[in-house]
Amino acid sequence: MSTRLYEHDIFLEHRTPEGHPERADRLRSLAIALQHPNFDKLDRKKAPQANEDAVLLAHPEEHLRAVMREIPEDDEIRQIEADTYVGPKSLQAALTGIGAAMAAVDDVFTGAADNVFVAARPPGHHAEKTKAMGFCLFNNAAIAARHAQQTYGVERVAIVDWDVHHGNGTQDIFWDDPSVLFCSTHQMPLYPWTGARDETGIKNNIVNAPLEANSASEHFRDAFKTRVLPALENFRPDFLIISAGFDAHHRDPLAQINLVGDDFDWATGRLMEIAGKYSGNRLISLLEGGYDLEGLAESAGLHICRLMKG
Ligand SMILES: [Zn+2]
Image 1 (cartoon, rainbow, N blue to C red):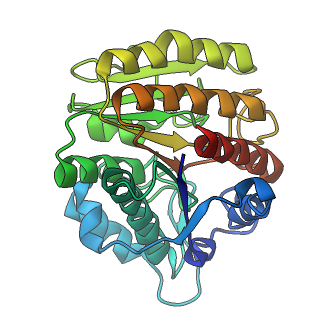
Image 2: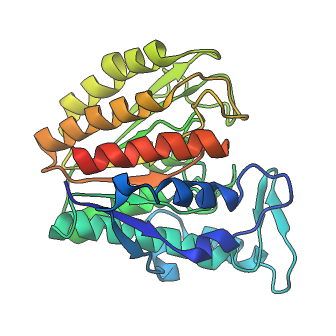
């Protein structure tokens, strides 16, 4: 497989307060892991910045304006929600994350790459239509799905979110849109306190597979085999997006799920099989959470390795 990676130094300049788990060191730690010779063939590209209009693919203009109003002009870091912060470069970073996600879509539909990983921050899956929350400003995965539909006429997009927190934002955006299947495995109860099995969207296009605290590999894989993969088989996606959070790793400080690096390799393999069967291998993966530097580097590294190997 030819695998492309989008990265950019601007992602390091989205600042959060000292001690905040969503910090620039996350990407530094991943970048060090990706220096290994295993990744020599990775096609590394500098992420392009999207126009502000791209936000409107998944959010109303009032949300874009609300976030823009909060961006400080001086060197301060401003709290815009319980645990979401912006600094002077945060809009630029967020738009570059969106630009990379959209370029990743372009790459897999033009054949420039088989699959793509976007190593961006801030993350996106908690951002609802009209609300920045949970470290997220705009929903990158949702914008990528809409871009694929609008630009390439894609009918069915599947978004699989294995971040340990429920992707409430993505669920909110696609709740009444059966052209998008959203599948999520996550710890429950846990922030953002949504993601129950009976939250199904208006056309059963939302598939939640909550995991109890202290669940481990077998529970995660079982949720994948019994809930996520059958839903994907049934949906037959034309295109697959992974909301790739790595905070279900056993080392992660924000949750109590005990996955190991191998589980991310395994889940990546299963989703690549689905992409091979229905989507012409077209798959992109967007970094969401993952707050233990070692756990993130290990699991994201194995995930990207699997993307490259097929
Ligand atoms: Zn998370």
